[in-house]
Every structure is written in structure tokens, then in C-alpha cells.
Amino acid sequence: MTTLMPRVLSALDRFHAARPWDHNAHYHRWMLRQLPKRFGKALDVGCGSGDLVRLLAGRAGSVHGLDADPAIVARAQELTDPATPVTYQVGEAPKGIPPGPYDVITCVATLHHLPFTETLTRFRDRLAPGGTLVIVGVAKPETLGDQLLAMVSAVLNVAMALLKNRGRGAARPVAMTAKVRPADMSFPDIAREAHRVLPGARLRRRLFWRYTLVWQRS
Image 1 (cartoon, rainbow, N blue to C red):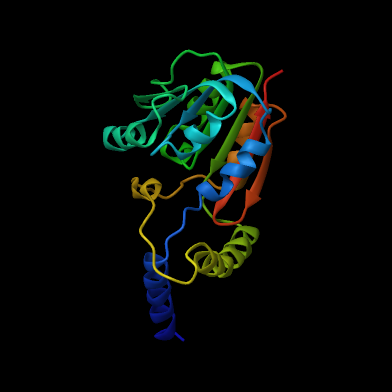
Image 2 (tube, helix red, strand yellow):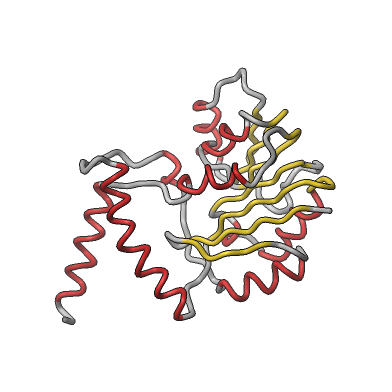
């Protein structure tokens, strides 16, 4: 067993390298379902190559994408139709977040790179009354529930890779070229602090090593 497990993990790594799919983009449609059909001004923090920004632009009066990586922001600009109501900015969150206010703020797989409480506070302060904050985040697995959900995700991850790539190898999506780092906060700690900063926030563990947070400002 001790010699078999490393070989199994190595085989899985090779499998997923040949059949990549974007776990973050998997939640984009779910995020849109949390938002009004139409809204005014939106902000996507950690926008990467702008996939979610372009989806938001179909509903928003204007969308602003913010990311700390100049190369990925340049790529986002290349991929975005100049006729759409979209702007991009290179900047570090939370200090670099423009004043707003925003009717919608989104953040996908970025919050664990940032000072958690300070960033949530900035999101809260930049949100317009009645505005909606939607986060897809990454937590440090610590509890038994985390481990069980990770096991289910690992199995489904193989099925999704085959489904999305139709059983063949595929190029790595542009959005998956960004730098990654492991999360250092557990889901219980995230939920506790989020409820302190954002009373009434709805948090839930999700498949594929993600959690979600939705909050509406009164």
C-alpha cells in the first residue's frame, strides 16, 4: 500500500495535466444565479483573464476587473471586445480596490491570497446599499467533513475531466496559468470571521475544494 499510493497519485497528476478543466469557471454560472438580471456597476477582484468579467458584462452597466498580475491583465484586455462596458486595472487588493460604490462585487479563488478580514471589510465598504457580494474561495482542509468532501471531489474530478475534454487531452485554459498558493484558513475560521464582518452572510462548503459566500448589504 505504501508503494502503491505514490504511483496512484502520480498517475492522477499525469491524467489531470493532460485533461485540465477550470474548477473556478465551474462556479461562474452559479455566481450569476445569485445576482439580479440587471445591475449597474460591478467589480471582479482577482479577475485573471477576465472570464467572469465578460459574463458580468452581459448584465451590467459597467464592469471593472482588478488583478495584481500585469501579464494576465494584458491577456484579459486582448480577450475582451472593446465594445463591451469593461475596464481592467493592475492593482493589489485590498488597498488597490477603486472607491465604487458597486452594485456587485465578485471574487473567485483570490481571497486566500489576501488579508482576509481587511479585504472583506473593504468589500463591505465598497458595496452599494442593496448590493451583492459573491465569493468562491479556497479553505484549508482540517475537519473530517473536509476530508470526506475532498474524497468525493477527487472521484468527480476524474469524471468531469473526461466529460469536459471528451476523453481527449486539451490545452490548459488561460485562466489556469495564474500563480496559486495553498489556503491557510479553515472553513470554520472563515465562516466565523465572515459572520463577524458581514452579518447574515451565507457560507457553504462546495465540491472541488471550494466554498461559497453570498452577502447582500442592507
